[in-house]
Length: 409
Image (cartoon, rainbow, N blue to C red; front, side, top):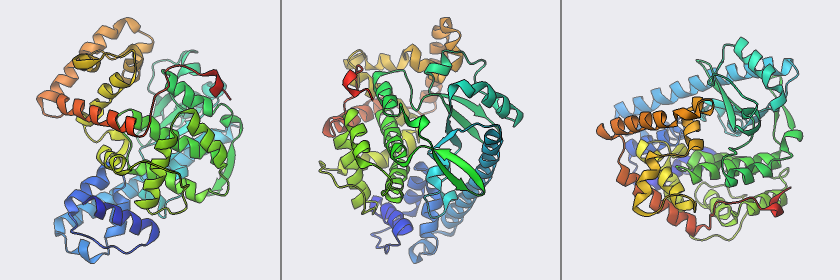
């Protein structure tokens, strides 16, 4: 079933022939949905004789869902470009991260749906962003934004019925030494913007080298948590292929080495070449990639396709960090998340830290309801976390525990 899923991906991007084993279209549908590439898989499959032999109800479901996602993405893209135009007309130069930049690399951009857009901004311009976005009908999810947030936050989010905008103050979180090391790689990136034109507009983003690094580090960030999926790897492979002449691979490799991720990157590139069909990707020695491939497939997009999977990240982090609770008491980690993690779930805690016990209890009640309804299975979360720790060891992934001055740029 996995092989048929990847056959369709290669067929879509490289027009390779589809030699199926015995396609299970129900399972392919679920995989495509979990990895947020359902329109892409439908486009690859819809004219194939094997797909036309599937049940009419499945074909109709596949088609209606794909069309709905495509139309929705077209609407969001148009609205995003309209919003972006309002920002640039006021002299702002927000850098687009992922999102639209990645979509434009796909044969049919709207076949890569996303519900939000990421913009990296200069914090000193935040009041102007806030004013413009509110006039455009967005509202800030935070009650107030403190000076500390404008220095240490990863994102400040603005929501609109059509679109969520994530305004990046920093490329990644500043809560751990691993995330601080990620941010150091991009210390000069904001001042080295790359300009391009699309649909009559001038847009700004990272340089190709920095954006390649960002896509990889973003994938790694999610891999460290609940998991990363096939679409994130597709984004990275497509970007490397499209900008290979402009990417300084020496700089990319140096950034990857600073995070101690050389083996992990090599394994991803091997999967990109051998499984996804991107033959021009860098070739580096790698251990067996099958365990990593199975993990990527199981995770779905961002490792969030189920609550059980999402909660596995708590056990993973408890094993990775020396200061975390060990052994059977891992389960305490899922009940008593640290203050920094709780602030991500409940932003109002940043202003009212004394409410931490209240929000712990609120979270326990939510977990209890999810367990009662069978949405969370803690033992499965625990086992998934343990299995992923084995992968970290296989691919020599070690989160950074303290800042190393030798890594400063």
